[in-house]
Image 1 (spheres, rainbow, N blue to C red):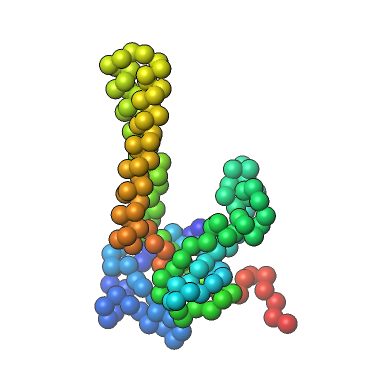
Image 2 (cartoon, rainbow, N blue to C red; image 1 turned 60 degrees about the vertical axis):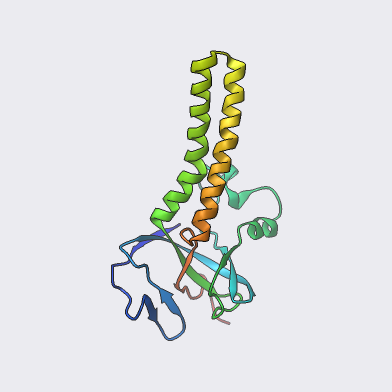
Length: 185
């Protein structure tokens, strides 16, 4: 389950970085709410840490289990590998470590609006325009398909722009420590 945390303006001193004894935490520059999640470091490549999100106890317990990305078709290893994501500046981390990462709430909203609303709006707009002008169901369906393709293309361009500016990139917040059921031997 994801948690939200409030980070106040000016929480960092010295140019937006707060140093701890073992890792530097990047603080947001504004009053942004972050959506937090726990992930495991699974690989390190040239200063980039590859992370896999940790499954929570609630995984498998909700009504969307059959459609959820965590319970997709294939082996557990292939499903987890498909969910891997990179974290820049992860050179100080070690493989197997648990970390807390955060994504700005407004960035998550932008990304979801880009992925879902843009194709939907262009599909309906193209369909409505075709229906109003041609009043033919076949042409309306074709226009909807074309509108969907255009919307997906626009969404892809916007997502590339958001990604290039780092707006939707997860940020390392802190180390998470051992899992709650961890027992040292």
